[in-house]
Image (cartoon, rainbow, N blue to C red; front, side):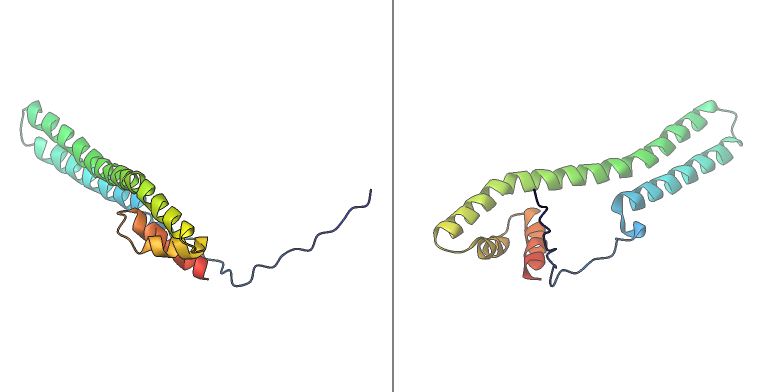
Length: 136
């Protein structure tokens, strides 16, 4: 059997985007803030508990320092879960809009563009990014 060589298709108009900086990572920013705040609260706690003979102040400060470290990360995770839930809630509406546009005669790309103009919660920015990607 002969081996057939295939020509490589050149992607015209595709831009190679650089990697996003590590400083723009939201979870890393939240983690850094939590760590700095927690260490600050804990160090202040141990410094001020030296003036008191009570271990209760040290224990309460320790608990507060741990909470200061955990709460921002929890809030970040909660926002991400709410965003994903919003996408899940609006996905059937998007698919129905896409279906009706395609059934009315629009091609798929035009249907995605039209559906991106609707208010679909957290799905709208994703559709606008997709539309910009399809335009290039």
